[in-house]
Amino acid sequence: MIKQISVIALLLIIAALSCKKPGGSTPVSTAIIGSWAYSKVYIDTNLNGIMDANEMFSDTSFPHQVLKYNSDGTVIGTYYGAPWSKGTWELTNNNTYIKTTDTAAGAIPSYAQIISISSTSFEVKDTATTGGHHVEWVFLTKQ
Image 1 (cartoon, rainbow, N blue to C red):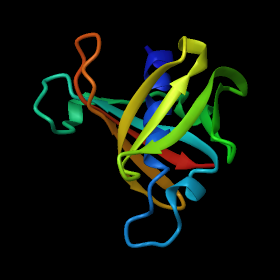
Image 2: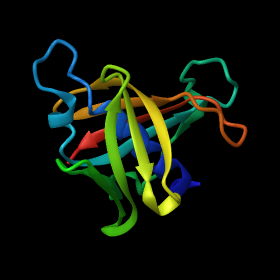
Image 3: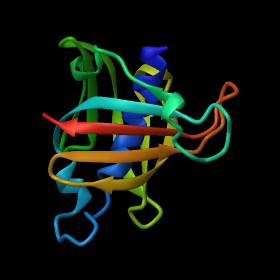
């Protein structure tokens, strides 16, 4: 479950960081460069479109699940320092979505809406319905 969430979160993160920061002048494509660790994930199991408290997925391993976004458009996911995923990222839809392709998963692209980004945190929202899922929100913290 953690790996599945990590791949989805990776794709969401990539999308979120490619837009301009709200009210700022630093492009998301610049702000995203670096390493980001998971802090929490919400999975909208009741399909009401709201992050309910009982839908938060948290894990003590989250700080050890890191996504490193590179300026060449590549991204690498690590778990306790060991690589678990790699792929590419790019901004779409006027820099409001991020498209990621996890090459380890057979180069299937994923899209996520960028909700917010700052120098220390970012949030993405994946609205694709897969495997009975719904909406997922992913929160990351800059390392």
